[in-house]
Image (cartoon, rainbow, N blue to C red):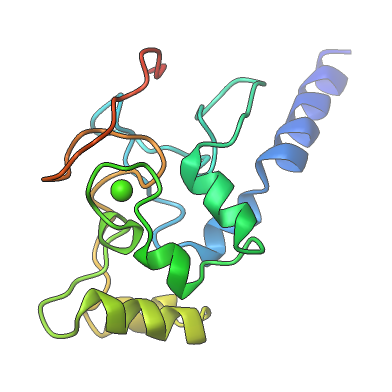
Length: 149
Ligand SMILES: [Ca+2]
């Protein structure tokens, strides 16, 4: 009985959180949790990182609007309005190429995430692209009042 309940919860989580999308998002498996420093946010496109309620955050809405692909446009967008473009928050390193160039590249070759990392153009994600943490220099958003930790 308990096993059935646990498996049911896992299936619901897998069916709704769509963890495979993390594979096509830069650092999708290692998004910092803005509410709990040092922890990850496993559902990059959702407002919560755990629990059953899974409304999309602004990054998730933008991702869905882009056909559930990490496009050049999504890379250059500032989904959470904190003043930092998604590509920068997700770890693109712009010391050699501009963000526009790197976003164009990943938009054209979405399977090239590991190539970018190996070549030093992708570091660790520095903040969450869909949950405002007010890190951006031109931040125009508020962190959620109940982030959960
Ligand atoms: Ca942002």
